[in-house]
Length: 436
Ligand SMILES: [Zn+2]
Image (cartoon, rainbow, N blue to C red; front, side, top):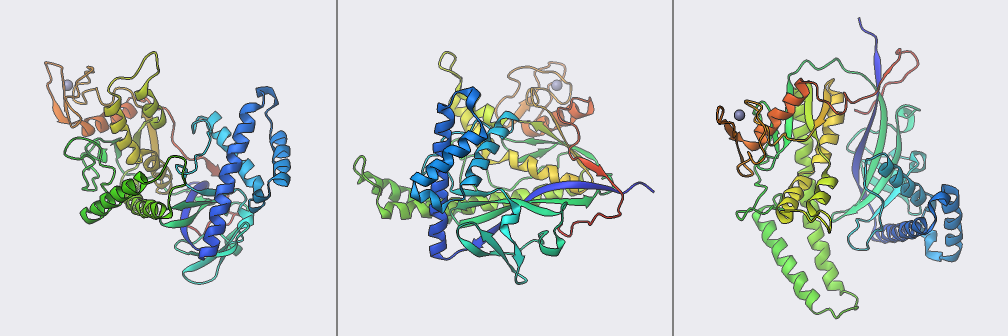
């Protein structure tokens, strides 16, 4: 018998908040104040000489600002400071880009609650939970998953924080959950390479491709950003966009946009949020199925933000085919490859499998049949044709890349070793998580 191994898990859970219109206004105000404070912090950060940048200094400045600007009172200011510094830490650790100013209309409204204990979560009904929202009060949310709260919570199994996010469908809460669970038996399933495809959403090296049946491209070759909407919804979106453009045309420069225009924008946002929810739903179902079936999942180490940037190039050295590349990039971003990898990471771990990342170069240019690499062997986006005269193999380009991804793993070219930090411990004294 092997030793019992406990594993630390971190994952998120999202629930819709049931807010009254007055509470929605409170939340909106709070989020706008948080954004304004973020911008002020960022301004301060940029003006401070590098050697003097410190948390305590920013904290002092923040206290002063709270005294002077009364509407900052609607805000748990410390939370904004913490979130801002976390953004820098994420940047320094290579997880994200540098923090930047947040624009009024382009930024999704959000408020961070860095401390889990402030939430005071309680289950009040089979389907409802209650949560404490700072400066708003007790709010109900849909209980769709067992959370480690109350008697189930302890040092190892708890909610470590949350983020309040507003999308077109309203305010949501995204809990950050940490649990300690028994490490499952190693998954005996096969290995598989996965590529974030151009034609196929997820191409698998064994040919078991995952498709949602919604073409990623329009007939003219451009990325279809509304593929998750049905024809009626697409028609409605088009009408709304035309209406918005029409209403916008009456606006004089420097004039506030009308309430009618904002209503139209809200309707557009609502449709887009519905599309996003469908995309995420599909991702969850697909990644669950993959994690159940395969023992080792190999993916490409992609840097999406870098790809979008590098397509543009610099002033001295402008990028080529910027439009096509950004179209392709957009479609990759839209397939939300990053989220797919995140989901696969924790889902494979939960099933006893592993997720492995391999370096990306040449996976789309190498022939998976003979190993020959030639620039330009990708005939078009959809088909790969090998330029090696002795081979001449041709196949679906995404499938070829997926086979190359698996090949890189098999020859031992791995950038990040098996994910998951296992904690070896005896069963005594440790309470397993109830949440699963
Ligand atoms: Zn070949």
